[in-house]
Length: 441
Image 1: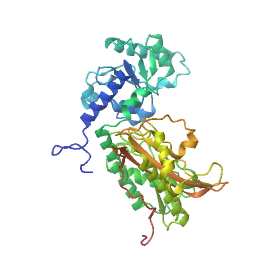
Image 2: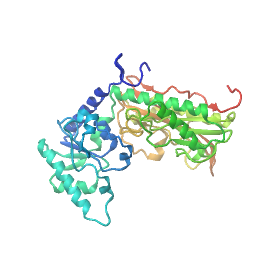
Image 3: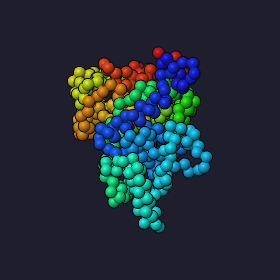
């Protein structure tokens, strides 16, 4: 990486926030036209960020109720009216000047209902629908369908329809905008990986037997914030050690105490740099040399990871890549047995989109998840500048229980003209032993 992470006056950095805002807006506006919509009502927090609006309160993500209104050919979306005098949001987001006009886009509690006032929500949704209708009429798009994303409320939809507004599913519109990343989005994803790499290093340097999984998560979180992470999506990470590495991945950290010889699976996921996330599994052996079984599990997981990574090419569909992976890239880790036969299982091995969330909109390459998803993922052509998290895991089922040890590995990257570029550089080829007294090579 040739540059630091923030804009400066003495050189042209790879990441340009103003360009990214404008290019994302252009893509979203283009998708409105492509799919014949007059507007999009977006409740999804990541769609807000994509369209240039940012709430400084992260808990807003878990308090749905705020929406933004993107109208065809009207530039940036309309966003909530400022609740306090002084216009501090307008100062922080000057590109949204004149857009802070939505009076009904704030009170999240209305979505939860009021048992003691059952009629109140109906009144509020009627008010919301009338406000949205007024903006549509002002911009001359009242006769066009209006999309709403997945966080929409059925009462709002009914109120809009009653007001004469045609409402349609708009998820595919925002997905179409977000699935191909701009150069600045790719750069943000790349630097999110740099932050997470530093966190993995701090885990390797500081973890020791006697610590709890909670403490491991704390080490990683501090390292992320020290290097400039905005937030952690979780807000914690996946941390599974010992027996939990063999049957509980993915799972959140607990008060389990790590002991010598345990495998430690950690996913430093959801690390946000300018809103863009990581998904970064690694597995380590803590406080003792790994057993032959642990090394064998690790090699099988690594073979799976690289086989899938090397199968991703632009121009192929997700299922064509799946077929290449199965037929030519299996390595020693394949074939997997049929459940519930004893053997090695590779569930959790797939490629999923990465972006403003760790499960961004876009195609999934099902990998070893094929049998579990029953082939329900639609066929989708893979294109340059799609970004994926590629993950692979290996677990052993003896017919009655899962083995004590399990391995999961992952990295993120971008589809290039010829293949797939991995963002992360943290060592992955061999099982690393950490917190071992003396020297181990």
